[in-house]
Image 1 (cartoon, rainbow, N blue to C red):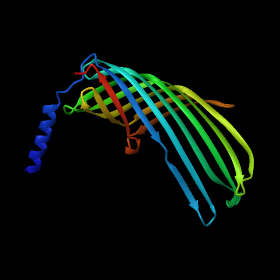
Image 2 (image 1 turned 135 degrees about the horizontal axis):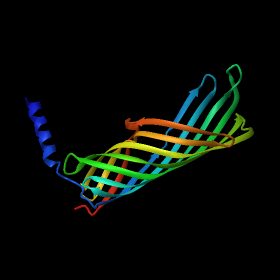
Image 3 (image 1 turned 60 degrees about the vertical axis):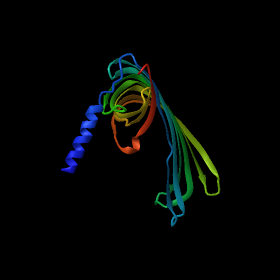
Image 4 (image 1 turned 120 degrees about the vertical axis):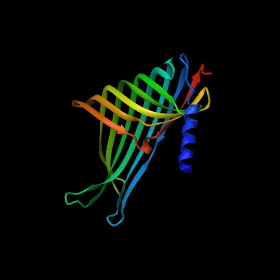
Length: 233
């Protein structure tokens, strides 16, 4: 009985406070800033080798939008992403024994996405709301790689390099949650959600079309952002 009453009170409070709105004509400005930099290492002390991979990725996503109806906004999203991966791993001989040499590979990338967004808010209290966002548009990516081999004594062998370019379009549906400490400032948590990409990949000597569908709902994909809501009273 106590649990029922508590649940009823919470539900009643939510519906009582769910009168907050974002009026037509409000302008939102802000975006998301993210950094990702994990390192993985695999040691094999018995064989006397180890492999290491270091990843760094920085992403900034400014968004400007305007509410064309109550709680409904349209706008422009421009996303810029820069990454670097440094891999260090052993070379094995034909019989799978350690050959005494290592590969070192450095891979750098950049990605640009630009396109319109549509966002709709559903308030659950005076200061909190869930939203759903659809975005889509043009994407352009570039990846370059440099690989070299060296022995335990530090002797390098000739290196190789290559690059890949791709461009096309993307579509994404993302869920999010926003908290308003004051009416004109929203602090957000959101997930990338469902995404679709159709790209034309161009390497130094080939070309192909690649289409992919992704679903990123795990907590490790959780990102943060902040927006100003100009004109909101």
